Length: 313
Ligand code: HEM
Ligand SMILES: CC(C)=CCC/C(C)=C/CC/C(C)=C/COP(=O)(O)OP(=O)(O)O
Image (cartoon, rainbow, N blue to C red; front, side, top):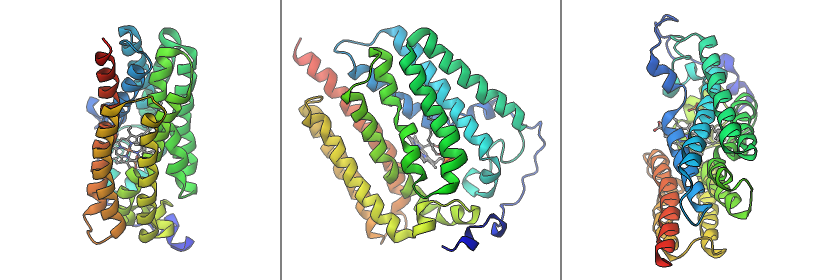
């Protein structure tokens, strides 16, 4: 697509919403936190915590760790709403968000995002450990500032680089328990990192026209749909390869291997459908399956961990 078409001037905005700045509800404060995304991240963090210890993580680490990571991730998401408020208003999918409709004043969202972020990082510093707090702060800045304010508008590789921030939660869970990094938590990051392109680009294919109209240089906009479909297929294979590593390095056992192979078969079935491009419904279906897939991968990691422990007791 030519640069001219990417110019914001050519954007046909969705009709302006008829809202007053005082029409916001308490529910909107939750919406700003992207709660469903954060919940899946917390599941990954919880599995990271469990894998870090042969016994159960302490209740305090689980409660304070998940609360701190959750608040920081919610705060990062709220910053994303603030930075993207004009962009969100241009896309149908995001046009009803509290700031996009202008029903919530931006300063209020900014205060909410700051409060959550400071509370989350402080809780981790105070009750968990410094390493987890600083790594969480790095992810927060990586998503809210580096991805949202810069990369998203600058390059079709935005989500690949920005994906590092979103992939951090299992590592944050691990360091919350151990206070140190190691190959295992980095491998868990690698799994989510490799999964992010098939997860997002499948949706981006489906929403290509909206991104184009809003002038966001997502891969299907800049390099076309066929190239993006190929990338979904290739990153899908990379994800499959990376998910086999926990078994290969002896971190997980047969329960994980069997479970992840079943999940990978289904994951690659959808990625193949996307790659073929014959079914126009496939990209959206692949996107939704990608969420069940990542939950499934972390689910079988957990199952295998405790199945292994029970086998030895
Ligand atoms: C930079 C990395 C990522 C990008 C660009 C991305 C992008 C997106 C987008 C655009 C949506 C649609 C949101 C909506 O329509 O409300 C979405 C949904 C979702 N994402 Fe991601 N995502 C990323 C990383 C992650 C990660 C790491 C997780 C969890 C581990 C995750 C979990 C989800 C979930 C659960 C949804 C569904 C939300 C709902 O039901 O409304 N995403 N993602
Ligand atoms: C501290 C920590 C773990 C931070 C991670 C923060 C976090 C909630 C990341 C979410 C990833 C995501 C949904 C990206 C999409 O943003 P987008 O702006 O491209 O999508 P949108 O158009 O739906 O807003």
